[in-house]
Image (cartoon, rainbow, N blue to C red; front, side):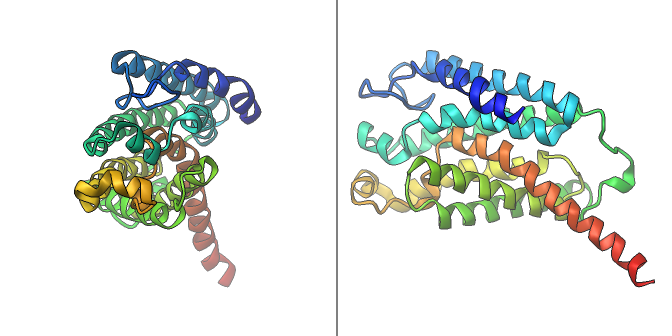
Length: 270
């Protein structure tokens, strides 16, 4: 299924987004930072819909984690082809681009959150008993705490890793950040699903470009040319989304493996 996502479905998703042109007429921009915003939004939604449908089928057969992973692998194709944030700033010469990227990031991650929740719900093998929830916090307070912790940790990881906008490095930053977000959200939050972690990544996807723009101020365009742009703002909305779907299942699985070890330890000692 992973090979099918990478070799077949992913290229189709990239083809759907392929005609999105930047403000300079070049290929390829993001949905809100493009020469034709409405068609770009439609094409991006089609690519996300394709990834979600494929992921739902996989989740139904093999579990939500693999479903999310392959959906993220599909979205990695168009995310890989999008222009980097520095390139977009240079093309537009417009400091307000960061606000548009924050809006697009919030909307894209909200859609990603909905998609991940759907993939989690269609998994017939989920243990939905109360004892399976785990986490050190409960209720809405636990969700808020886990989401904020996931956002902060993911942002720190991106800040450290995304020192360049090379596609592999930027994608790695998004995936590793999502793995960390998934891990901490599973330890703290009341739910074993991906929603809490992705909610945290939604916060990060909005805050990252806003903080980057605020710190750069009127020198944003200059910082794009001098290479001093804040690393946190280097990820495009689709990179946040694809990294979330790939990384969060890995992080939650790792956290749950720690739970299992802790539960087995007393039995071993006794």
